[in-house]
Length: 257
Image (cartoon, rainbow, N blue to C red; front, side, top):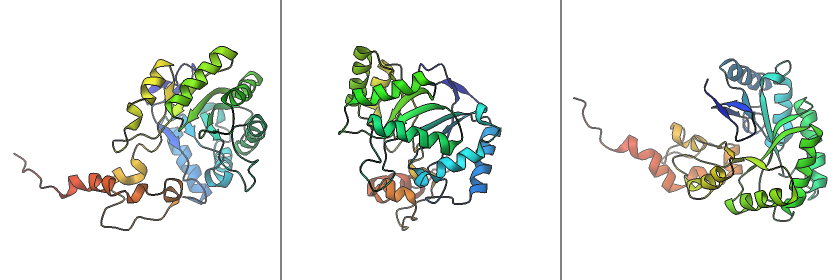
């Protein structure tokens, strides 16, 4: 398995990362099957696993906590915070209060005493980035988190975060996790240049466009209902994307010589 540096963290990760959004009630509710997937990935040389507290209403983290029993030290484990963890508006976001509560929940569910990478899942326009970075810096200094990163942040927010970190002496965002595939190359405009400028690692989600690039979904077929339709509404019914994935199968093939 090819290995890469995770930004400037000094952490070596496999080129492939096992994403786990579909573990649990939103995808595969069979805990034993999910555990087998994790073990198969580890045995194949993948040492990087990404999850989030909101996946499967926290069940995904619990599945991983059990699956990694006895193998935690072989894994670079990443999770995220910020998404809604209940009906109350106090149980979400990037405030210091919620970060400190959220990290303890993730540590408990994942059955570990530290996280290799802790990521802001989405932008939080209601919380000053300095408060967020200050709380995350304290987690790094306490040993509960090795490195911090972000996901789905616009380039302007990433630049602001680095500006604040430099001037306030806070830990920097070391990674960004955007969506990226041949059907969605928007990050090439701003995100990738900004990440390169600040030495950030980039770990992309949905490189297969949530199954569109696998042939699983076709234009003349009703989309299969799953959690992806909830998290990214309209993605599996976008006519431009469906046209793109159907095109190679409908155009005439040139005869081989």
